[in-house]
Length: 364
Image 1 (cartoon, rainbow, N blue to C red):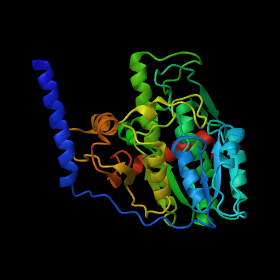
Image 2 (spheres, helix red, strand yellow):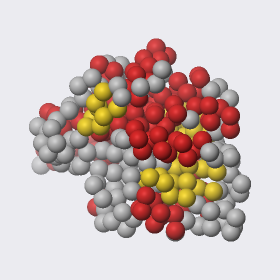
Image 3 (tube, rainbow, N blue to C red):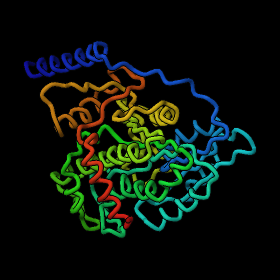
Image 4 (cartoon, rainbow, N blue to C red):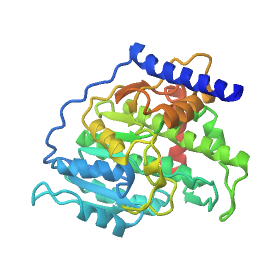
């Protein structure tokens, strides 16, 4: 009974803190502008065949935008496109194949993008995570500069390749770029560049030990830190282009699944602590219109930024495991601009990450 009483006391204390702290915080939710018609705009959403990307594409299409969505399978992208709302007969939508682990696929995709008469918004949403049991295959992806883990390729290097190929296009069109990162980027550390040289590469079909499973999750955080570093570097390179970083929160999507077909049974949909994919998608939509703030991340719930005594990965663990997975629905929802991690704001690290990524894709 004493143990149960102590557990209950801790739970009540946490609940009281997380109920009161947001209401005493100076960081209040922002009020996004009313969503307007997007007729005449061209918007690209990578990873638009499932999850928050698919939900964002549906909403953006319903407001009149011409949508390009990508998927690893063109047939799946085409099937999703068939169900996107058609605002007018003159606004078609398009499904494109894009495998972010394959430089040839990336080159084909960016060649298509360069031919567009305009590109208003690019939403870099595509990404992956190993399955919940962290069993393989842990594949590798070959780039001109060497071999990297598939998660690094999917979550960062492939999107960086897209960006780098399209730099002049983005600048010419004044394209707004939305990076979908994660609160997990707080788990990333400044030594991530060294860790990418040998990032838990395992042979196909193998599985990770428990300690490696923790390492795989840390690697996921590093890939999301790469997103933040790349976004901040892009803001410096193209200061006239709006660049926004978002984290959709803990959403009921099929990330971590081998099959992400729409309608696939997803147990996360029955976890009461998760946001819906639609809620995550709505945040991406808002990011296409809210004025970005450098060094901030748009997210759908309040976090306790100034939690005492926690720094580095310990702070990241608190944000990701405690706040996001257990308390995101117990604090006020809404749209908040929260600070990125110290590592993400490190200009020298931004430059190092950019140069490493350029070398990996074989860019001069």
